[in-house]
Image (cartoon, rainbow, N blue to C red; front, side, top):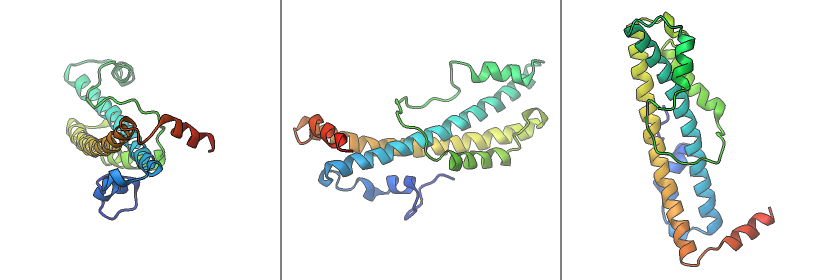
Length: 184
């Protein structure tokens, strides 16, 4: 669903194209920074998708768990504790993201397609088999998004490493960065 398409026009297609990081040492500084920003923005958008999917996974798991333990607690009460819990049901790499998602509508459509395919608008009305199937679909999609996100993080690392090398070797400076942003 979010797979890279060779020759595709989406940002994820460009960022994961091997040409995007080719000859990173030969890129001029503004181009290097721009490519890293593109990759960082893609990571933010993918992180948003993951968070939406993880929330749905938690909801389905809470319903399945509530059925299994004979808990008569209302689904809304269970959700308050599930979605507000400190511990996540999934783990990922923690990175501070200082950008906002840019493709919220597109992202929601992709997640809603998975959700609607799984009949999850009312988890309490679903059979155990439907919930198990829905959970499997959600987890599969979350793994796919996580895999793509890790690939994007690898691209970010390529650009960050090159920027670090340039600063370390005196080929770039913070002063030049400040001067270029003052004129903007």
